Length: 596
Image 1 (cartoon, rainbow, N blue to C red):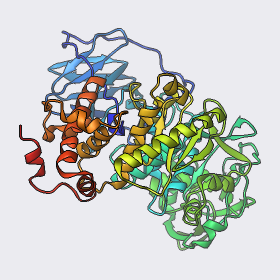
Image 2: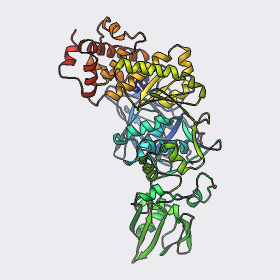
Image 3: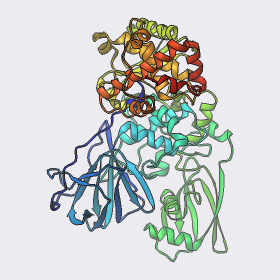
Image 4: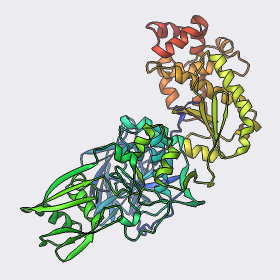
């Protein structure tokens, strides 16, 4: 089935009680990072003291709880949450109550500081010293996808994005990040995550996250540390150059980066008034006002500044960069690889690179991908000796090839299924009349749980085609249930039809053609022609396919799509329907098809 069959949570809402239950709870402690989900701090740089919760759509309600044992509260109108010390004051439906923590599930829109974001994942709101703290529970792969979309740029292509996705996932899972209320924040302190939609990068980020789902870096069998920066300036930095307490790691060393260096444009310059620098450093507790002179007193192996002298005081160059960035803008001193001079109360900075320079250089990775390098070759450049492997098992993914397909698996025994897969691939091509020279990639997961964590698909979806990749539950499981042939033929049909389809082809037509051609007997078209016309209209089909929340709803929508597509194939022939997939349906065809 197609990736549109993502599971949608539904929640039964209780009636609003007479009053909220006030319950004191202990302050949260740092928790181990889970393998399948992450608690991500939202809007962590805004320090909001008040926000509004708004129903996500008309006729929907806000469901929240003020303690684990409390009944759910249901609101049809906006709710105001305000921080009061370490408590949350909730006002809604004419009532006010105080709680230590508010938990929200279901789709809800959050509004604060002039920004509104609709969340579909569970989240909790607490307060600390008069500031609201929002922690959103995100599946790991959802988190990776959002960070890749937020941190990548137009020069990236799939292979550089796949390398970035592996680094992002490794950073998130392999080290603590110093937050008590959540695992990671949404700022560059951890990894930048924009909560709003990013249509320009979302599709590519999704494809990269899905193609590398569950993969992290390992070094000699142990979990590795991984970092990335926008532009290393032509030479990467070792961790200790930036963070003095860091240990020396053989796969994270300072080394020339010819791919970054050759693209040019790494140099930068800025002018900052002494008064602005004084205020920025004082605001971050690095230096009290009154200092006059600023010089670099120590440099690292790569040439970056390690320590800065402010009259008699010495501070870390990286702390200096972060203080300037957060107070005055990240373009003022974008890296610690700089020279500085003073002229009439103004400091003149001239440097190269952007970011700390440790680990993967995004600029160099994009150049490598443009040269045809793979994500594994990119990772080998920036993390020599480290290898991408499955996070849960520590095993690397293996690739096997057969006619018209490539299979990725953690288990070499899955190669025994290649003949059956090749046959399903050939049948899909023969039935559809679509011959694609490009191999179809598929990934077989070792367990159903791993498959669900990677794809976010419900357990009743045996396999799915998404972003030019077929993801499947364990092949041995499908074979044992006598589903392997039919499921894989169905997914190969999806892959061929999607490659054939243009932007004007509606979802119901793409899904319907696959349904009409996928019957194990090869007679699906005639079988569907004998069935009664579905109650679902063509106008309602796309929404029904995209938002099915149960297996029954999904099956009904796909049966209807298959019925309409079978009518088209019977009346106009396969060649005409394939042309309409490319160009869109002619005017009048849909109206005639829907007539009883």
